[in-house]
Length: 175
Ligand code: G4P
Ligand code: MG
Image 1: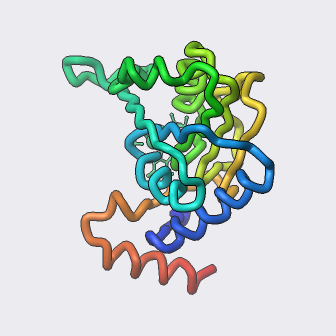
Image 2: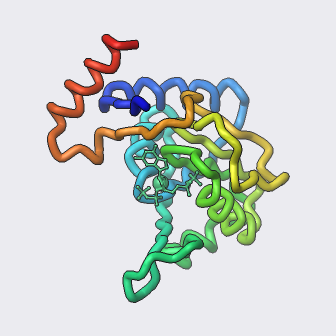
């Protein structure tokens, strides 16, 4: 089964489209919350279109002894960020909505700090049955691109960026 290969330019265009949808909806973002690490680069590009502060949070699937865990844990949830959430309209950004487990976990954590509203913006949503659910408090959900349930190769994971771009070009020719 083919993978999706995206270049940084592809990502930038998808973020542009995503930002366009957020703006068109009338959602007034107070702050962008980026879920690390995949959400960091999309969040920064998004700020070019929606110029609001970025608050970064990290999620880990490893415990303090570096053993893998079944459930995500909070990492780098700075007290100051948690205090600031109250009453704010948050745009939660991640690169991919896959099983939705991480996303659900993050949304629930954010909601516990009483933001005014939480909207979710993901670069890529895989069309599939999800294990996680979006809590009813989430009033808006935006995607840059809805894709099939296939593995995505992101440019920031590439050790050889030229090879990444070549694979992306080859995939475009096949499509
Ligand atoms: P979700 O709630 O956003 O759907 O995430 P899920 O828990 O299903 O995903 C677990 C990890 O797998 C996440 O990374 C997610 O980014 C990554 N992932 C899922 N599908 C793909 C894919 O097609 N391509 C790539 N490259 N990664 C994928 P994470 O543990 O948060 O790590 P990080 O890479 O964001 O630091
Ligand atoms: Mg991620």
